[in-house]
Amino acid sequence: MKRFKTLLLVMLAAALCLPLVGAQDVQLTDPATGARPFEGQELRILNTEVVPILAYQHQIVDPLYEEASGVTLIYENAAHSDVLPRIQTTCAAGGDDFDIMFVEDGWAGALAALGCLEELDRFYLAAPGDSHPEDFTTRAFGTVAMAKEKWVGIPTLVAVGMFAYRTDLFNDPDEQAAFMEAYGRDLAVPQTWGELAEVGAFFTRPDEDLYGFNYRYGTPNNILFDYMIHFGFSRGVDFFDADFNPLFDTEAAIDTASFFAGQDVLNLQPPGRESFQFGEVMQNFTQGKVAMYGTESWAIPLLLDSEASLVAENTGFAPIPGWLNPETGEIQSALLSAGPAYMINAHIPEERKWLAWDYLQLAHGVEFSRILADQTGAGHRISVLTDPDLVAKWPHLTANYEAAKVGIGRPAEPWWPEAENAIGRALQEVAAGGDAASLMADANNDIREIVADAGYYDEGITYVSVQQREEFVCAKLADLGLEHDECM
Image (cartoon, rainbow, N blue to C red):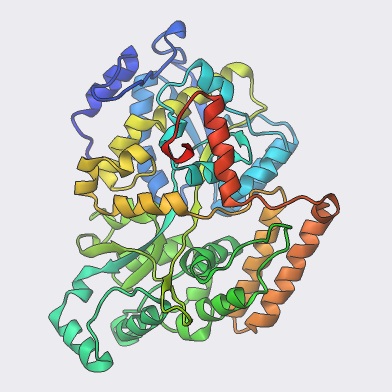
């Protein structure tokens, strides 16, 4: 991938601790310790490249950091399903095998309980660099970068739901005429679940190796993500009520499972759909095998890369189809705001913690994030999502920004990964032909037992809402002497 000529200026500014032109209050290293205080050292990162944007970050951002800092980055890439168990094992043993860890938002509570997530306040206060924690929406930062009220990570991305579609198919006059004849309305990108099924059926043509759309059903983690992101939140499904009673046996949750994992919807997807994970669904879209693809913003770089996708030049983005409320006639739509952050292993020596912070504040700071967005169309910071030049180049950034402001995050309790597996396995059984109502009720009971075993009911622990997470962020930013428009 070609780099911009301006990257040399960025590297030079970083190496010399000079402010970049147009960048306010950017200090790339602590001048008291020299311009390249960690030159010659190696930084060990436990990682997974399960989503495309991470690979593009390594191609674009990491070389900039290595050149600016003189540090060599050593990655240990693991399968997504292996990352959390590996971190838990290392943390429980007090190990220092790696300096930085890839941590999804739903894992932070479990790892914080093990005492292996280093709080970042003191690093920021001593050497803020280009970190700018106020440059994220409060919803996104509270979900991805914090473990409840503690700041423990810098987001590597903020995932919001998106809907990709083949513009060549939707704009084809012959397809438009055929759809009008079959359905009596114009062919358009679906806005509701009903339209999704209708348009999906129209484009499902097994003899042409073309199908309507594709979702992820292959692992409990994946199926729960797509269930909630693309369907559940719009239907009004939530994880828990205020008293930590799980809500997966409600009418809304069962309706959503029946639609998303039901045979009618599965039949509009390529063969093997029940086992598909991240890679398979992306591949089917990039190879032109599906007309539409329910995805997240982390997929943008690959979907727009002509070297990676056969339909890159014919890929458009739209909001996720919502649920049509029969009582009001309104389309309900809501989204997840999730993602991983890089977090510092609390068990490494003090000097290595400062090296890890140096990487976080620069490699995933404002300026390098802008470069990444300019080249790939993927952004997660406010300054990127609202930049006029970038928005003109990548119009979907505006929708990403709005989604990041209202996204709903997964719970961050220590036991959440176990609960996530319970509901995810139930959804997989629905996709295999099981009864949605009984399976969701059983999973709901399993999750209730998990919460009870953790002592939450006995101790009267209440669920942390997305609004409370925003309050945690605003309180943290105030402690750091920072202001945020959403906290006014």
